[in-house]
Image (cartoon, rainbow, N blue to C red):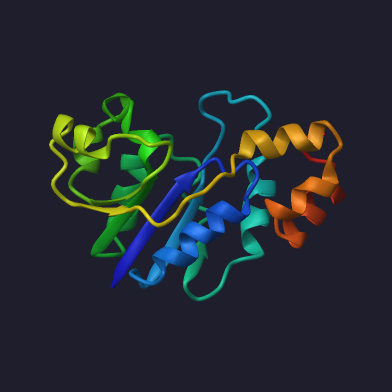
Length: 183
């Protein structure tokens, strides 16, 4: 069984995130979503429970929202735990993560897993594949996303809720409004 692992802050969960998951489910059997804690003191990062709840609108038999590994500080630890359950794991990352991939804790250990790299920001993926000697990977070029969580948070701060429907599903938008997140 091919299992994708999608780790991130997801602050908030937007249409780009779910588009990636749905596209990858054409190649994977399941995708496990692991929203992370605030280990790096990111600005405007809402409570982990809100970010998990936003993902729950999408949960089904193929999209699994993990609520137990969120306290693990490093991606390699998350992969190690999941490898005790699943044999074939694929870490899903944006190409922008490759720029400082060597700063990830135990990044060499992460390379024991297959990477699914989402091409973005015109990053020269081949340069980083060679730099880190990445051998097991799949590059996804067909997901062109012009959505960023920072942009969404800024629109909310500016009270431009009318512009958010193009970036957020109604359930997520209503959740953000209900709990007055990012305002």
